[in-house]
Amino acid sequence: MRIVVLGAGFGGLELTSRLSAEFGDAADVVLIDKSEQFVFGFSKLEVMFGRALPAAVQHSYRNLVKPGVKFVQATVQSIDPVAKRVETDAGTFDADILVVALGADLHPDATPGLLEGGYEFYTVPGAFALREVLAGFGGGRVIVGVTSTPFKCPPAPSETALLMDEYLTARGLRSSSQISLVMPLGVPIPPSRAASAALLAAFAERGIEWHASRLVTSLDPGRKLAIFSDGSELPYDLFLGVPVHRAPAVVEQSGMTVDGWIPVDRLTLETAFPGVYAVGDVTSVGTPKAGVFAEGQAAVVAERISAIIRGTAESEEYGGRGSCYVEFGQGRVGRVDVTFVAGKTPDGDFEVPSRALAADKVEFGTSRIQRWFDPSPALGVSN
Ligand SMILES: Cc1cc2nc3c(=O)[nH]c(=O)nc-3n(C[C@H](O)[C@H](O)[C@H](O)COP(=O)(O)OP(=O)(O)OC[C@H]3O[C@@H](n4cnc5c(N)ncnc54)[C@H](O)[C@@H]3O)c2cc1C
Image (cartoon, rainbow, N blue to C red; front, side):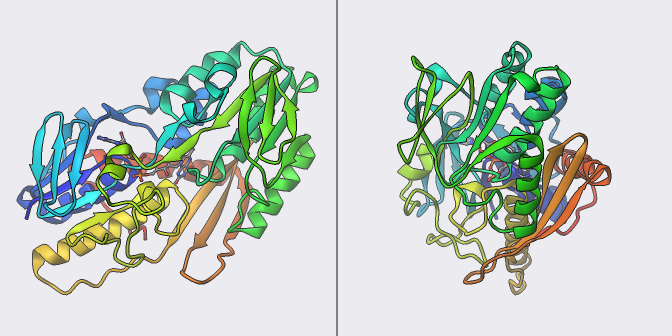
């Protein structure tokens, strides 16, 4: 059974780790990614705010030593979901089971003025470059703004605004600065009333201006103005944007997408093409685009593939559960636990920010790196 997994992010790494743990050398898994290394989304904020060095958060795929898993660094150039055949710049791969975990591509160029007049903090190069930009910033009007929906990790812009408050305060620049947060959502984290209330209270306490239910559609670099979807404008000295997200072009060209993303069965993660699964940000499965959900989906697909290989009945179904850590600054992290079920409005539990949860978040990252990169680590249940 040849299994080909496209994308070695949260989804691809979790899936291949589980298949390796189950079948060891007997597995025939190829994992393909164009990057040299994995970087957690949250590590981008760590680097940008000077809390970690780039080298400390880059996990090289060269160190991925998994029995039964062959990592291939290559760019996927075409996907034929009927033949289950993938063309890459390192050759052709034929699969019996194909899993698409290629995430969402980011397009800062799709927002007029963003490249010329602002910065984005969602790509690895964008976030890493901001480290120097922020270090040289002398204070002024800062806007953290979302340019389109959907976007990954809905708490990340709120976290960025709070960490910016902490950063400017530590440098004695807060009193000469304003921080504005522009979001398309009515509240910061719609699936949790308690988390949203805590974030709104933190914004009010720290003087962060909250602009709800609108997008930043363009920047006017000459006049240093951010233009909102409702036509209003806000001046800035430093603009930090969440860029436009799209499924990778190779996925769009494969004919697998509907309305921009790959539809899947929300319980099995199977696409409309037999033997082809999709997990994580590239799908329209109904959970937010976040690593914890990609990981939970990958765990289910791994179990279903294992059942096929073993010839047993497939039983594992995706439950839509995820826990997201939320940075509040000042060394404190909160956590939202939420389950997305079709037809029900989620209302996640919120654990208030604490140093203990900040330590849990560090452990979350460390444990993932161990189980994704070490030859035979213990695996937890995550769906
Ligand atoms: C600032 C920020 C903070 C975040 N914080 C959190 C957080 O605290 N918790 C959380 O759960 N999530 C967080 N996220 C979101 C999280 O990073 C993503 O949702 C998650 O990585 C999605 O996993 P995935 O497997 O679907 O895709 P990805 O992890 O994006 O992986 C996709 C992979 O596909 C590869 N790829 C794409 N196209 C090709 C191609 N043509 N050929 C070969 N390879 C290709 C890419 O190189 C990439 O490695 C954050 C994101 C950002 C930007």
